[in-house]
Length: 122
Image (cartoon, rainbow, N blue to C red; front, side, top):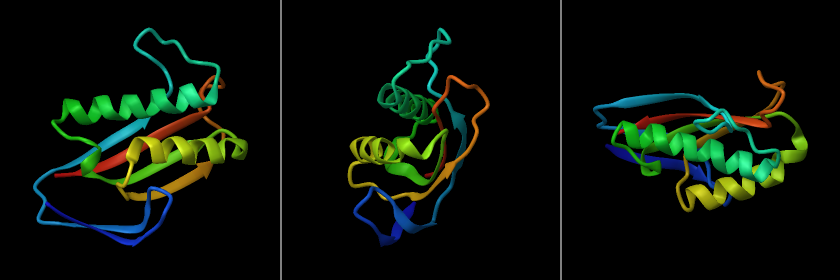
């Protein structure tokens, strides 16, 4: 698969992300900050890291890694989490630049402060 971030930013995302010559697409449903026992951390930073860890688990289940990310949508319960979300996203993604949308919205469970969905190509 060939990937090309278009108008790459310094914030771990690109304005667009082109893929070609791919054979598989993986659509990851919204991953929430809940562990296997149904526990949800109270702190946003821990919730964000847990949601990203859940994305990573789905990727590994499909034989993929963050290197294959082409699109991420993050739903935040409140705009006050915006900067922490960006900081942790940069930690997780490093120099990877998928297309990104962040939406401030009500979230299904009041305990969840965010949800992350993703699209992968390989």
